[in-house]
Image (cartoon, rainbow, N blue to C red):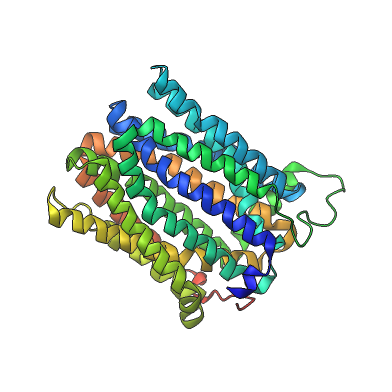
Length: 410
């Protein structure tokens, strides 16, 4: 930890990330409540809304990776944050003018997702220019811990805030957080160049995209990790959509209790991110990530067993805690591994390829989840999602990824 604090650029980047994460944890819940409660959206419509958030990753994700490897990442981060602040401000304004509708909400989310695509591609590739290679895993662990803390307090605060001022107005808090994040990011100074050598040479978009795809999917360990991650995100998109409908509609719980269950996921993430470095060193990259993938179906197994009583709420909270724990352990180790084995000139394309196709998988899973919930019921849809999570865990365990090791120990 002390080593990270010596790098002022990383510290400012960390602060900016923390500010935006707090706001995002509020709007993440508020958008769902606006759709389900305020606009009375059906399961299919909620699925379409969730898919709209990630559709830009499917359409433009690979191109974003090329752009990040061609240009400086800091201006992309600052510009995306400031633009997202303006875009989110449309929702409370539309509510105030009484013109808020589901098509407008979907349009705003679509634009917001496009800006987030640019930000995410640059964000994941920025830390290597802020800290030395041996600090990458702890650097990503600190970011994961911050996200986990925000997920812990944010949903509960969001539930109370929504009850107090309404979901549309609560989204304004997230808009302000992006504004503050952009201002702080503008003061960050990288310790090494942000762009790979040779960026002044003639470029070929198709060739560069192909290089990124080849690196990811032809690698003996990175390939299976990426493919099974895509499968995981298909069913995570399905389960996330159905989970909100299940809690708010089937069980009839309030947005506050939905936020409480998410808060337990945040607690699990904090614990997992704190322990990730030790767990990764003790058990190795491959076995640790595979074990975390098996925790996903176990976590969601509690949801369809829950009822609209105290025991049901406990089951939901326990499931979210286990899911958060698995993600908290997994994410820093996976990010450190991916960055450590990838050449600097391919970092942007590697990150954008995996992240974009992961998010594109949600575009498939979220609408399917809504359709299944509408036609088969939320409990049956949850069971289908659990089955899908088992499939991805089996596939990763049987792949060469089980032998994965970090090339730089932290």
